[in-house]
Amino acid sequence: MCAVQESRRKSRPTVAPGSTRPTSRDVAQVAGVSQAAVSLVLGGKWRGRVSETTAERVREAARELGYRPNLAARNLRLGRTRTVLLVVPALTTEFFAGVYTGAARVAAEHGFGMVLYPSPEGVGPAKDPFHSAQAALDGVIASSMAPEALSAIRGDQLPLVMLDSDPRGSLGAATVNLDIADGLRQVAEHLLALGHRRFLHLAAGIPSWTFDTRARSLATHLAQAPGTSLGSTRAPISIEDALTATESALAAPGPRPTAIVCDDDLLAAGAYKAARRLGLRIPDDLSITGVDDLALATAIDPELTTVRLDAELFGERGMQALLAVLEGRTPAQDAIPVELVVRGSTAPPGP
Image (cartoon, rainbow, N blue to C red):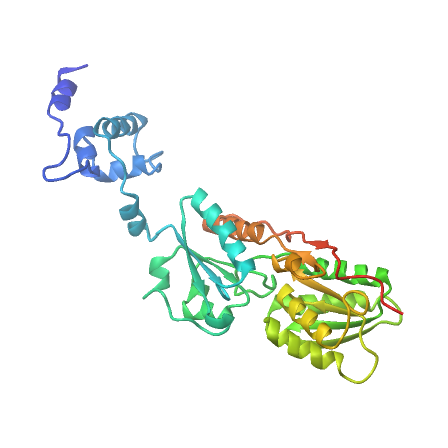
């Protein structure tokens, strides 16, 4: 080692005066370079801007001092906080709890934190949790069931992934969808194979792409069988509202449906109660299906035939799509498969 290098090494400070930890200024002084050069090297952006020899000198100085970049300060300078917002209709639903679990797991694996933002009662805007969402967030994952909440926090001005949303018109955002149309195809084919021809669709009373898609798919596939009829009634997603809507529909004049296709397991539970109030047996007099495969599906008797949606995988794919957007990549476009789980609530229609 030459005398100049030895002299520089002996005169190197360990930490800047008054500091409790080494700084980039300390690294720059020890390496004999500018702070800008330290930022380039430790940020991995030095090639073509500083020499390999200088880069190695900076890395050696950082190792000797035990220097670690202040990621929080660096993220603030770059406008990045490594924080993602997940917008859902409500915190009280088992399905969206699973979505959060999956999304948060992938976020944590990549060094991101996740903030959960519910829209009260699942409709309308909630209070903006940030003075400026753009200053506090790197991106947003949002259910299409909470569009007003998304507008309230200006989430549509950030890198955005929409869940259960029309790929053709989602605010220019990336979309991640379950193959819900195929789920309703499976329901229709199952009930038709059992011999059902008179159907009631108990639809969720929420304007949303996913529920519109369910209605279209069900109608399309039932219409392929001759002699079918399909009625429809709407209800908010609650057991009591579903009970009221189903009771009215079943008591209406004309031939009674032999199968009820519900947009959600909670709606199906309400349909169960309505059927029993009217003295109808499930599945002997009335077959009922749901969507989601919540814990409720195996708690009611008979257990519910329903479309299983993998909520955690849905959340994982949502976060993976947002990471792709942040990195300038194109997210995966394929819909997530769903599966009909056949249980005791469906059988051939009675005589």
